[in-house]
Length: 237
Image 1 (tube, helix red, strand yellow):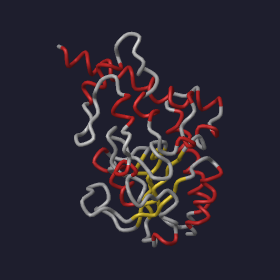
Image 2 (cartoon, one colour):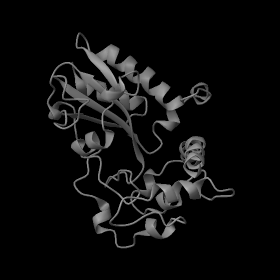
Image 3 (tube, one colour):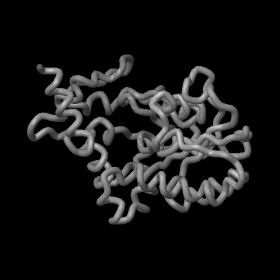
Image 4 (cartoon, one colour):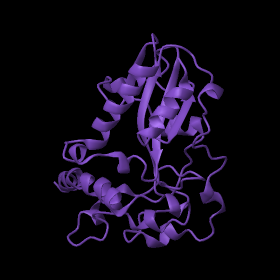
């Protein structure tokens, strides 16, 4: 199986992040099997720009597009090698991998005050789209584990800390995890400026050239609102 061809094909469909990583030794989802993991993601607008109007009308357009296109590439390029989606797809709950742990292993992920990963090259504007377990070990050097790697967190050298100042809910700290309760309650308020965006996220000065389009940002944040509203209402009962 030629993982470089898989990487090249995936980039055509907007998946411009690709890494071969070993199974993290403390990840229950991956210690059960031999082989390697293909970690597939996107940065910037590459994936969004590939979504057709047809996919955008579906219940879960990004996951459905990912399963269809990554599955197509794997069927074309994996040959006789066994492979399986761990994410997204129909993997058992106890087999869903820790995406941030895999991202750290690939060099993509560093912690940020927002609770999402930050990357020296792509800033806060990348996402994990698929994890594919393959039935044979593959050297990381065979699959370019550095397509999205960052040697250190840009937060460590950031003096401005604009994200902390921009959060109207005061939910962020440079030294503590984000206060998700405060964030959620602020977002679901009427006329909230955080309903369809994250003011802290868009204030980050790192890799602004990779920032998602307004439409893509609105898609992610508006999609999460109904579940946040239910969660805050249940917490009030």
